[in-house]
Length: 253
Length: 227
Ligand code: HEM
Ligand code: FES
Image (tube, rainbow over all chains, first blue to last red; front, top):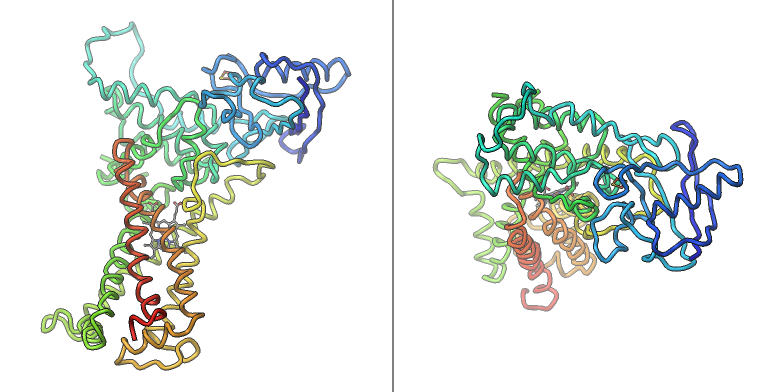
């Protein structure tokens, strides 16, 4: 199949960047979206041009590296009959022959463009460093059944832990807010016994880190949840909010 | 840092302030709407109700004190609500300096996307409403009599332009209440998927009943039911 691509090209963070049009022929409907970009890049390299830079790693929807805004939707996922996928799991059979496809990077002040479609998501790493961990001495693995965890709590913690940190929530949010990511990370440890010791410091420190990175605030539009490839629920934002309220009521104790 | 001084500076703390002050205003508009329905009981009843708002609590409170207490609470609430709304909106605008060439919404409804604009509309409407029925400025009300609110309402709504402004104000209020009522539960952490439908239903109820109650008065005047 044939495609008309409009791709954001930007040399580096300083370059203002702009869209460049490409016509691509011979795309297999069975190829994935990233394979389609590989095909384009091979053609560009053969012509002696600079290939399009984009993030990817596992290509099986688990690492969270791929990060493309496709026709105005993070990961282009509204196309697949199964929603909530990553761009690497999106297939070209869901595009029309001859279709124009607009590809942009995630756009947020806290996610500056490094090159073309690659953005710097280290803001997420700094939020995790602010509290998304438990302080225990590592050593030999403890007996798994030594700490009983209720089924409901375990399920919720697992649901929150499904977040792969791709940033689609930030990309989708009208305010470029990171609440769904931070909510998932705060909530995950809040349900588990191991997370109790640092529970209230964690939420305060992670929310402060989130705000310091320049993400927007939450207006409860629900765009993040709809765009999340891992179906992370808005419930975790509510959970983070109540954790922060409790932390402040306790006055840091 | 935690505590009373740092919490309101966080993006979440500001939303919690909006939720609490929004709830105060929902309580106020609900009570106000219910009071307005006394128009249907006639001039004597309605004017006695307006006077009763001022004599409420006597002899413990002096004339007008209860009313002023409520006024101070809602003024403080709206100032905090607007402060949080505006500072958050400015932050949100800065959070995406380069906009998308294409950005499709997957879920967000018009109510959730228009909160700040609806809020500004409500604020302007409230100022107009105060000039109309509380201060009775001659520029907005043709024949204002300080001791006869029933008369002021009837005469006020005989003007089509005034009625139109009220209708617009009430549409803005309905949208704001629809998103706001659900949103405040989410903001203070009292929502989850098992309550979500219930809270959406509550939001529908609040967003329909309150504006509908209000609108019966100008419509009643126009249709000649109230005169
Ligand atoms: C009758 C008057 C008002 C009532 C009953 C009301 C009620 C509410 C409620 C309950 C919320 C939800 C808070 C939350 O999400 O936690 C809210 C949010 C909001 N209000 Fe108001 N409000 C009123 C007036 C105003 C005014 C005058 C403005 C601005 C000038 C305003 C701007 C906003 C904004 C921007 C939000 C945030 C919406 C969002 O998060 O998406 N409101 N309001
Ligand atoms: S490349 Fe790993 S999730 Fe897409």
